[in-house]
Image 1 (cartoon, rainbow, N blue to C red):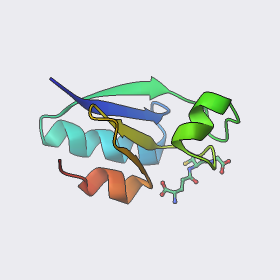
Image 2 (image 1 turned 120 degrees about the vertical axis):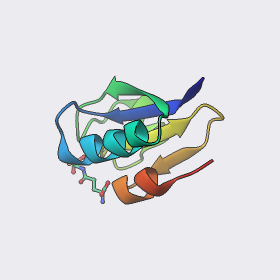
Image 3 (image 1 turned 180 degrees about the horizontal axis):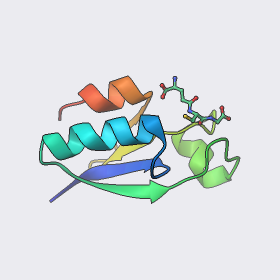
Image 4 (image 1 turned 180 degrees about the vertical axis):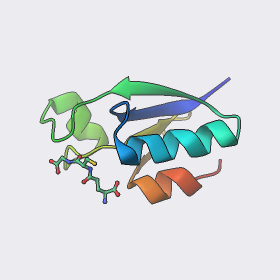
Length: 74
Ligand SMILES: N[C@@H](CCC(=O)N[C@@H](CS)C(=O)NCC(=O)O)C(=O)O
């Protein structure tokens, strides 16, 4: 079952840190490739600053800031 999605870039350090923690906790988290600094309207609804990474849980819960994402537990 999906835990959620991480918006970020493969090999970006902050994205990677979040994905490593998810993997270590056996969480199914999809990576949605998103360029840092994007001003796409859809992404700005997730992260108003356009920064990566961002997390959107399967329940719709949104988190930004890589440390907050990494330590988040449902
Ligand atoms: N405090 C944020 C910083 C996020 C951040 O600055 N991400 C960079 C990429 S590593 C970014 O999106 N830069 C694009 C920009 O600042 O417009 C965090 O730790 O998640």
